[in-house]
Structures are given as C-alpha cells and as structure tokens.
Length: 417
Image 1 (cartoon, rainbow, N blue to C red):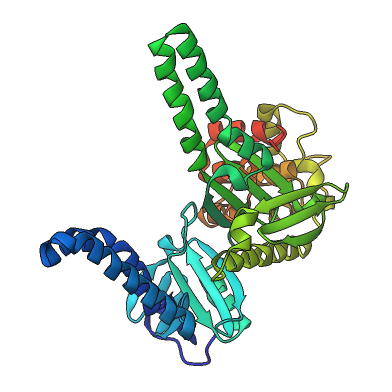
Image 2: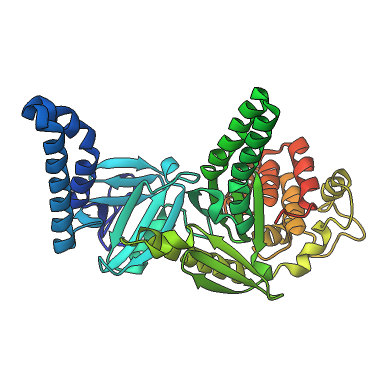
C-alpha cells in the first residue's frame, strides 16, 4: 500500500490506475454496431444506390478502424490515471464510491502488456468484472484485495462463465443431446402424422439453449474447489490434492491417487483464440487464487488433537447436536484442555480439518456464542467453498437449530462429483 497518510473515513490512497477499454476498441465496437443505422439512413441520403453505397462506406470505416488499431497496437485495456482510495467499505475512484457490497470477488494477475499487476474486482455469479485496477507491484495489488477483505483467508473467489461446455465432457454431450432426440421425434411424428408429437419436439430442442446458456461457476475456498452447473456440482478437497498443474483454459488439480480434477473457465478453442489475453488473464488469476488458497490451508493450525469431541462418529444429526451442546460442560471425562471453547475455535479456523469436525466445533461454539462470536463464524463461512459446510456454519451463526440439524445431516452425505 502507499506510504501516503490515510484520507477521511479510513480510506487509504493507493498507487493504482483504472483499467478501461481503449478508445480504439470503443470505436471498433461502435462502428460494428452502427451497421443497421447506416443501412437505414443511406437510402435517404444517397437515393436508390444508397443501400450498396452505405454498406461500402460502413465496411471501409470498419476496416480503417481495425487497421489503425492493429498498427498502433491500441486494442484492449489501457491504464487511465485515477485517484484510487481503498477501505473495508469499498473503493473510491476519482471521488466516486463503489460500495464493498458490490465487490465480493477479487483476483490478482500479472499484466505483462501493461507492465504491472491487475486487480480484478467483481460480483459473484456475475459474468465480467465491475472494476479493474493496475498497480506497479504485486504487494500493492494484494494489499488492495486484503484491505477489502477479499483475500483467500477471508473470502472465497469465483469465476462465472456461460455454457456447461466448460463443466465437463459429459456436460457437452448433455447440452447437445436434445438435437438428435428432437430430430428422432420429428421423424416419428412425420411417420405417425402426429402434430402433437411434432410440437412436443420444439421444447426438447429449445432445452439445448437452456443448458447452453446456464452459467457455470467455479468457487475457490480454503477447503477446496467447487464447480457448479445446471444443478450439478463437483467438489475437490485440497486434502486430496498432490499438486496444481496449470492448463491453457484453467487449472488441473492432480490428486494423490493419480486422478485429476479440472477447473476450466473457457473451452480449449476459446483459450487458443484469445487474441487480446482476456481469457488468459482470468485463467492465470484462477491458478494464482488456487495456489493462495492452498497456501492458507497448509498454514492452518494443526487442530487434529482437538477435533475428537466434535466428530460425528456415526450419530444422527439430532443426537450429534445434543452431544455438542454438552461438550463444554464440566464432567469426569470432559476436563481435558482439548474440550474448551478455544480448542473448538482452533478446529473451526483450521482449513485442513475434516468437514464434520469443523461443523461440530461451530455448533458447539454457537450454543453460547455472543454477537462477536457469531460474526466470526459468518466470517469463517465466507472462506469455505463446500456448500454443505458453509451452510452449516451459517446456520450455526444464525442460531437456527432446524437449519443447523438439516445442514449437519447433509455433511455426512457424499458430495456429487
């Protein structure tokens, strides 16, 4: 962060510039979109030959803008000098506040073209970034993310893209399966002369577009990576991972058993044809975030010894919760130092602890937690990618017993892969 004194309201000025689309890129997009207007106005201006002349003028303008941009290498993003101030409540950009509630997703990546580090800020479950900043060094970039509370030790980070084609190979088959099915239905409808069957083929065919444009989301937490598409989900725990192997369109988590878990945020073809490095930046940011999350998890305190009293041990959710309510009560077998609230917090904060140990410890803490304790549980939940564990910790923080029992029951269920 900058050495300059802090400004009002705990905002701190940082040495960063705003990244924005270059004027040449805007001109190219504007020219491309102007085609309907040109074709509508040309006949009014030039008469009968207006349509052909208008198309010729439009194409010439498009090629001229493109040639200028390629010659000057001015396509893509450019850094624009800005007054950037950061605080836990958001970012002030040239005096305009972008509230922290609109920035719950962050990534940092080196930008070789602009000779700096890009801070990409956005909203989870949203395609694209709301704000991108450029800093001269990595420390400043990561300082911005940490100031906003969006680093790996305080929050999950996600990548959202359209199309289940990046979810898995099976998703690609599922997406296009409606086409041959609809064709078969139409052939049968023709043979049987059944208009009803022919009409029923239409929604079958349209279901392809529903799946094609359903968002795929990859969520990176300190516990692992969750990938979701069309109601399906796959989760990979970092405990099961031997190494991270970068791939062109995402990241490959090589497991200890030799299998691998791919997290892709583009198709191979999209990554190969990424002329301006838009996808490459997101891919690198994804890989960096996974490394950061794995480092945070590896640096967690070893709470294995303290985990025993909080484990499920084949009990039903209600029985498990009833036992956890008594775990801090004095008794002949409950006087060990490991059976304390401090020990429970060690387990909750241990990113490498088992799911049921963390959930059990959180449930035990929630029995007597004050407002500060509940806020701390919510903060831990923000770092977890596994939906089952995150929901359980949130229920514990809210003091919602019914939701907690349901969530605790789900923790034992095997995550879909």
